[in-house]
Image (cartoon, rainbow, N blue to C red; front, side, top):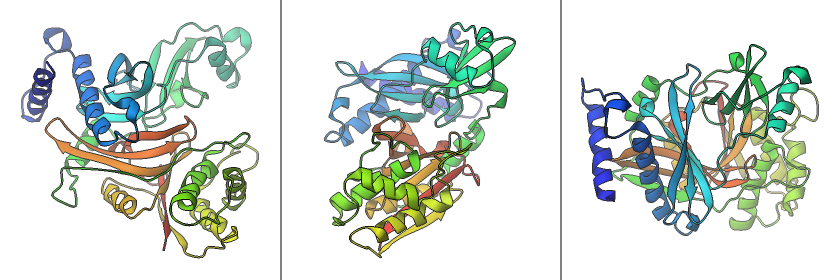
Length: 380
């Protein structure tokens, strides 16, 4: 049965590449779009679980279940969220609709984003200035996906539509949202132009890193910096960097000049990230003077291979995405070019979700100035 479904998925992929061939409406096909998305999700999961068997053992033999559809801001179906199950929930995977040719957008080893409790949604919406008697909420009227970090439940009341972020909990008017991912034509064109720097058809590597967030220490800039610093300390011979991690966080909070109060409280500006990390290493007991950083204010598709090269050399990066101005640490990569799909994923630690294995589709980042910031951290 699995062989038949694989052949079917390949056949549909080939059809999508043939000019003039258009798939019929779901109601007129024997294979629905949800089924194709499920097959794409399972194929991705089966492949990565084989490569990451020792690091993510809970994905061995896992299956994808419980599809939940998401729309873009034009009301068009653009993604399916699946739960990964193996004797319980062991993660999630977000796969695109036909609009992006059933690619893998995002996956992780934590529970999938969930619709908030009614009281939680009401509290978030009231922070926008709505009075309590105006926030009579029912079930969400829509689920939106606008790009990485952009999972939203939409509530309708008082002639307004308000979106509550399923990861970060904040609320905003739907009219104020924008898509943070490239449109399909741009995305697919960039993906087809990718050229691996070797004759290999797949690659996978991760560094010994994990997400970190301590009690009272949760701002994402220094948290991601701790993931990077602890890796260098524990696995690369820099044993005199700050220890424990809470002390490293406190130092990074200062050296990265994380904003202490006001509208931007908790923000680490990208131009302070690299210099702040290096200053932390210099101020440590080891007084290390061989660390450096490299800034990229608008990383594009081809910069993926620079990340691959850096990881191969043992060098992680900090990544900030404007949608929620959230920092992650890039700890690895996974790419594959096969008849059943081409993927160019980065593997991150994410303090917001407590996930040490968050897979993100690199091609989903728009590559525009002041939208995504990449800061590589080197030891020379």
